[in-house]
Length: 175
Image (cartoon, rainbow, N blue to C red):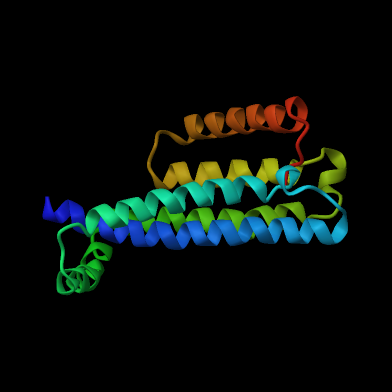
């Protein structure tokens, strides 16, 4: 039980940082859009990250509080020091690489493919579609999900369905 409380404590701290980042990113998206045109916050692309980040923040604080019950300040300090042991865990490193790949997708692949001249003039969102297919194939290969052929088919079908839902059914913009 004590090991679980330690993992809960470290996870709560990590998720608090992530949720704060999500909230500030959502507000930043709204501020960028607001400079170009007047739009209500509830209609901006920053609304959902703020809502999800706020929910994650509340849940993380509750988890942190639960993991700290019946602990003295000395025990809490020891938990923070023991947090480095969790990072050396093979499963934790595996997860951190997955998170890093997601960061590469968001901050490198999507902007790179969206910036290719003429690509979006063929089909709006084609840069997003190609970048997402490449990311999905890469992450599933990293996770050793199945064969390359099945991974490719799953990625392409998923992105086509996602494109149809977001762009055509909901008429929402793609990155």
